[in-house]
Image (cartoon, rainbow, N blue to C red; front, side, top):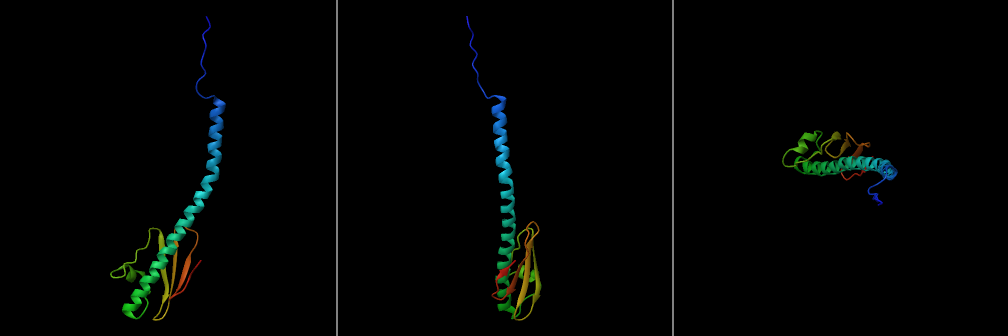
Length: 122
């Protein structure tokens, strides 16, 4: 009487090939994710800089001057919120203009806004 043996499951070679394919896909995906993470950090700095420009304009409407202190913009009634990791600096402010910088500690670009009505540049 012959006893037949069923071959079930995967061989070691098949499992090694699957692991190799997963490793190749991970090697391709991880650098792409890192680049997208830097873009997100940089976008947070840009967004905060735009919000700070709006707060500066509101401050100017109330006080007829722009402020050198970012703390003035974070209080009522302007309520500027600066994202975690973003550093914002008011480099200069006068009665008619201001210059602000923003960067994220994990980003790779420092952005500059010259206002009023200026554009954000890296």
